[in-house]
Image 1: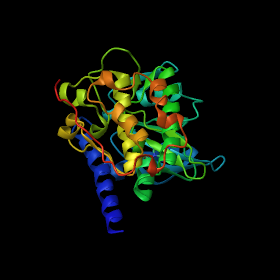
Image 2 (image 1 turned 180 degrees about the horizontal axis):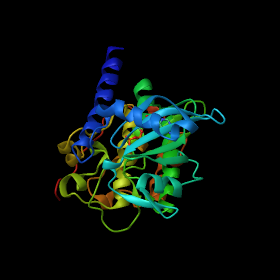
Image 3 (image 1 turned 120 degrees about the vertical axis):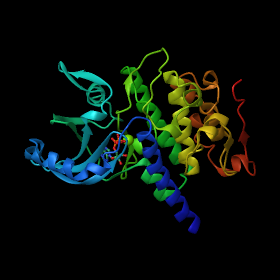
Image 4 (image 1 turned 120 degrees about the horizontal axis):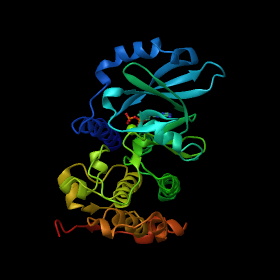
Length: 325
Ligand SMILES: Nc1ncnc2c1ncn2[C@@H]1O[C@H](COP(=O)(O)OP(=O)(O)O)[C@@H](O)[C@H]1O
Ligand SMILES: [Mg+2]
């Protein structure tokens, strides 16, 4: 019991710290200008259409409130994005808008992505109105409440996450901040919804040299050399996510740990799930699954009866990567 409380405390600290670490990589905090932001929201035409509710969360890019659409009482989420923090723009009906809005618009109709309802431009901010599944939790809070998830539940969530990323990539988009906080779990149905395209961009096959995602989900090639390719970096973040789902916390906290890529698994995990995690978290990007099909072809995904503890009792696996090889 005490262990559970400690785990929750350490996870919420990590949530805060991972957000703080974003600030030191170019994103500034909005938490300290709460009152002026509230005023701006209230002054805008937004207020005619929506009643602003309580704070749902805040992170690297924005602050998100619950809201109610006045016309029909629909529950929404309202994200406030300070213009100073927008580093990339896209096009929406010929108008220049933050990339987050352009990408969400392009993903309209993708069931695993939270849907954009409306957006507003204010003097120094953009406001994004999105659907808010009811009732829901972000996956970080969901895992914090429940601890490590049973493998069959983790598998269902991972399949949904991967299926959604397939559609996102097919639309020519890369999210670049795949992590527990950026998925919503609909509590009644366990349906997963991807949010927060603020670090995303258009997918390309050549190398990226910019990254606004979360450090503890970033791959060793970014930490060491500040460059990465889209698919191997996505695979790495999926490995961190899957480890988080089945172990209750992320595998690496520091740059040194990311670069060492050394994994310690709980002994009651199946060898099949460890195989998937090990493959995604291979130090060498070429050793990770080359695409989503290859990821889903791992036995853990194809076999529904291999998730019991007796599959591999009593073994603690460790993986040590060759650094700089
Ligand atoms: N559509 C939504 N419905 C419910 N909660 C949401 C929604 N969008 C965001 N949130 C909550 O707000 C938090 C921050 O939102 P996010 O878009 O990830 O902002 P940031 O770019 O600051 O990380 C999320 O982790 C989640 O808890
Ligand atoms: Mg986020």
